Image 1 (cartoon, rainbow, N blue to C red):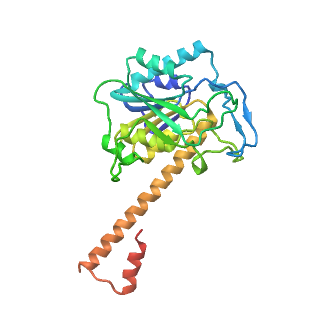
Image 2 (image 1 turned 45 degrees about the horizontal axis):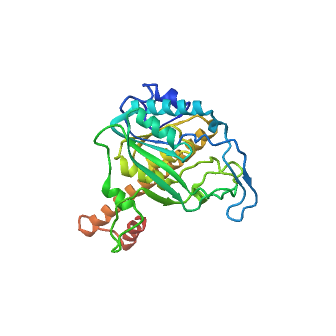
Image 3 (image 1 turned 60 degrees about the vertical axis):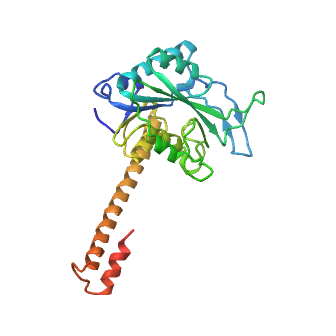
Length: 305
């Protein structure tokens, strides 16, 4: 099994191939599967709060109800095989498709621990003007067995809400954060339209990766999309396996992860240089060896970062 891999394939093909993903090898699965909501073609032109807006309308997000139920059960069943006995699975969903995910999780022996509510602080407008504006999505957290990882103190630290005295507060199951925007949002070649319609916030994945896994664990995303999961896994010293069926998204993931790798290499190089120069200065200060001039001392100090 190769780690830190991006597979351009159907998720079931990879999940059921033990040469690609060994059984009981994955600590955390984050899945953002199709919501099966495409097809209405609703649009909003010249919005004052964010420009033109179009409802999701992608071929990969269109299935008949029976097909969608079977698809959901199939990938959840296959996911269980690759999870460690104490592994966790997180499934992003809306109220439209939560039922299918919940039923499949229970049918396959998972235990649901929490349903996280993502309260979107900059939610998209209500286009029909016939219902309340949808401001929430959900992330189901379920476990395969006992002894799941739950980094309680880290989650308290990550919680932006603090007690009155400023100390850390228990992480709750309502997470308020905006939709991806600004530099975080991946754009198409023209730079005008979002590359992926359902890109999840980095902060969302940060809490899941740091809260429910440890360094060097394997994080799997069977619907990798814009690549937020492997990007965050790389950021926090986890291994990843990403599966994405659409080639255009695979290319975006590869580019995104490659940029992260280059940044980490640069940071490592600067850190080593900083450490070396500090040791040199400490050696001079301790009298182990002496500078030929004040100019050399200043040179060493100026190299520190």
